[in-house]
Amino acid sequence: MKTAEDYVASLRKRNLRLFVKGKRVDDPVDHPAVAPSVRTVAESYRLAHDPEHRDVFTAHSRFIDDRVNRFTHIFESQDDLRKKTEMQRVLGRTTGTCFQRCVGMDALNALFNVTFEMDEELATAYHPRFLELLRFAQREDLILCGAMTDPKGDRRKAPAEQPDQYLRVVERRAGSIVVRGAKMHQTGVANSHWILVMPGRSLADHEGDFAVSFAVPVDAKGITLVYGRQPSDDRRLGCDIDQGNARYGGQEAVVIFEDVEVPLDHVFMLGETAWANPLVEYFAGHHRASYGGCKPGNGDVLIGAAALIARLNGTERASHVRDKLVEMVHLNETMHAGGLAAGARGHRTPAGTYMVDPLLANVCKHNVTRFPYEMTRLAEDLAGGLLVSMPAAEDLEHPEYGELLKTYVTGARGTAEDRVRVLRLIENMTLGATAVAIRTESMHGAGSPQAQRVRMEAQANLDEKVANAARIAGVAPVAPTAHRPVEAAGVTRR
Ligand code: SF4
Ligand code: FE
Image (tube, rainbow, N blue to C red; front, side):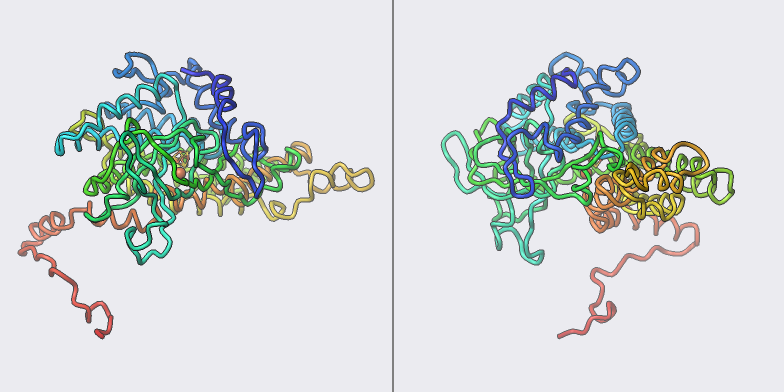
């Protein structure tokens, strides 16, 4: 397993084509837009070597018969799923932001199952190929960026009607394929080693060119990364007092694939349209449960910051302040309970891995689209208006009025700088760079709320619930009508 230092050194060997605000970045590892992400992901390596955390951050892999970082592990028991969630909570709490490594872990687990099941049903030979990649990823302790979301363009149109909006195969050669398109919202890609590409939706029979999954080095010829600007980027370049969380941060990018050649050895789906949806289901299930680990970990930081500012303000004994903190704890632990429950109800798959309970995974992620918003509201309430009206660090140090300002921003305890730092941390998590992780990313990452509601309806087994209620009520169950009449839905027939 790599150390944190090995990881950072390995990133320097890549020849990335990365642009930040229109400028090519030659050394992404040290660039202020990327360096916090590097330090964040490096914690996943550091903690794997920490005796206190070794049990949840590592596992034994039967594929290389060695201990591996859990982020490259295939889940083989319910206990593995529990440890994954607990590992994510520790990392979320350690960094206070998105630590970016879960997408690759969940993609590995999804592809493990789908390549196995495809080979069983279609007599293809994807699984042995995939196992080679898995062994490589485990031995090298790689960061794999999972890439699923296509741009989608006009949402009314299918991929075949607007091929540029979906990543696709544009040429099939003897030993390789050539792909073109883009993947959006690529978490952590600028500090990854490889990209693991998957289709992002179900596909029709004639959409075989879009049914493609493969692995490719992040610096392969034809790949361009365009950094996604973040709300408080400008502050990232300023002094660390004003950044709130100067050490850690997440990072997203658009990844453009301009005729990228991929050897067939690294291709795990090529035209099997019927398997695109199962791949999305496996991935989405695992990834939606992941949010029951990372977001409560981030929530721990936000709750801690809210409690700390109350103590600095001298309000911590007020009953309404304590009650707000209790409410935050309740919301946070409810998110975590969803992630743990999805794993505890995990089941064995045909390939011998463990898959989370899909309904509970969707419920978990759906809570995550809501609860962080209420938690950030409560944190802002406890922080007070100074959260957004605090003068800059340069003002506090100003020779003419700095000392006076410090008098006016000092609370019940601690120094003026302490209060500034804690308020900036809350600002960072509710309005700034990390808010991307704890709010908007909570909304849309691993699928927007409606995606979970669609799956929850499909997985809820309403017929069984109706039959049970009918039995208790002593009536006959009633089947739903095949299709809801258009008039009943309030739509005028044209
Ligand atoms: Fe992991 Fe959470 Fe970031 Fe997704 S949002 S990569 S689950 S830390
Ligand atoms: Fe995410």
